[in-house]
Length: 390
Image (cartoon, rainbow, N blue to C red):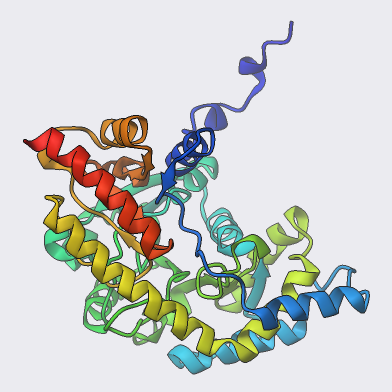
């Protein structure tokens, strides 16, 4: 018999499976589950985007594209960034079309991190950053954020974690899972800390189109930060195109030229039909984004009010489509809370510690679901919370 454990790479063997997928899979395995666990919009991809994909297939556009992506798409991405945040990127040398924002994150980290390099990761955060850093031989260094600070990265917390081995700061705002954002003033303070260092920034802005009240500000808009920042964004959340797997990187050419090599060997190019669809999304779907954002905002306000009413203290998220209430008053750990809620009341949410140890004592609830779906889930949660708190 082959001893597979002895053959699998230690770094992979020690990696924990995604806490998000664990509860998603548990929910899918049972009947009657109401899931608020996955960050996937419940809206259809806009019809004009689907029509563009159909047309591309009808015209036989099924060959490889350039490794960087279709020239028309890179031009459209460049124009969209310029329109939204006023930062210019050269389509030919500074933009790479990736397989979702996730590939962009992966190749950015792998192109930069040598063994022993430290990567500062703002937590709670999306689940992929630390595992990719570890697989690259780097050292993930969490920077905890707090509800009292609206889950923002503070300059004091950043300074405390910087060392002589710090290579990269992962800045994930608007934030998954907390819904926290960084204002221009917040980012200016972070830029001041980084000034005079060689620390680069990976700015994951996949939720940049989904903010409520404050308009999104990118750290690339602050001073000279664009020259040290890799901006990652995509189409999954803003355009409800999760399954199309379309994202992109925008960064200085000395960085994109290195990331492109990993992309070439690992991927070749992003799906051709999805690229044609993405061109159409950028050209004609601004109004669709507005409509979806308005609907999310209504759900957000209802959900936060309801969670606070039933006794789960909840910071009011300002971006993305997640609420991150505290469940500490129940006396349960995050995982225990989610397991019992699923077993007894058939509601699936995600434990906060899936997003780093900083998230313990919280749960993530996605409001990328219909309001009726959310209301039914909260009714069940209220019964569960009453049982646990008296």
